[in-house]
Length: 223
Image (cartoon, rainbow, N blue to C red; front, side):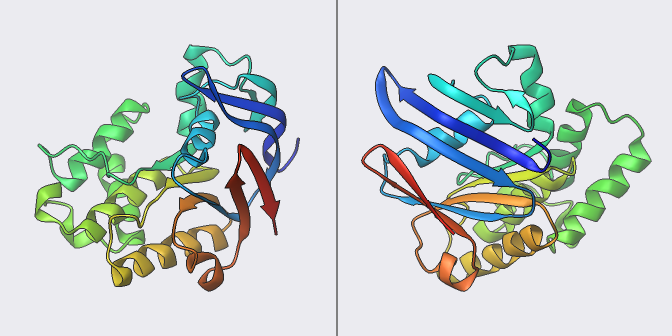
């Protein structure tokens, strides 16, 4: 499975006893930009949740970063998730602490100890997303686009092999959304696979990548 980050064969995914997706056959390689396209409720978020173990795979064969998602143990999930960067539409930042403290919280949770190295690393990833001058601010003092940049920085903290982005531009105006897309596309061009669900059909035209089309419980994967 070298360089195959995700391999799904004949996968079935359920939500509350309903079949959401069936006969899912996908292979994801390193450095790809992949768009998940489809109506609300078509299974985009459900599929993405199976990639990090938030939703079980009901049937078929499913491997993510060589973990068998049909047999993965709860204690293995943190190790899988450390190798993924997850970007949510609603940010999920801790509002009672600064940008830097939000990122330090993640580093502590993943075993970092040296305070100076942690500070340096946080500033490095904030610089990557153009937010190094806002490290002292609280999330509520930032615009939506700035908060999303912090979320991307958080996703990059542990040098992930893959970024999962669920509607990352959904709450942003057109100009800010484009800035976030430029950032995510640059990340994919640097060799990190980005899987992104979106309703904006312009993004795949402006920032080329593979398209997975969700409809009628199935996924049609186009290059």
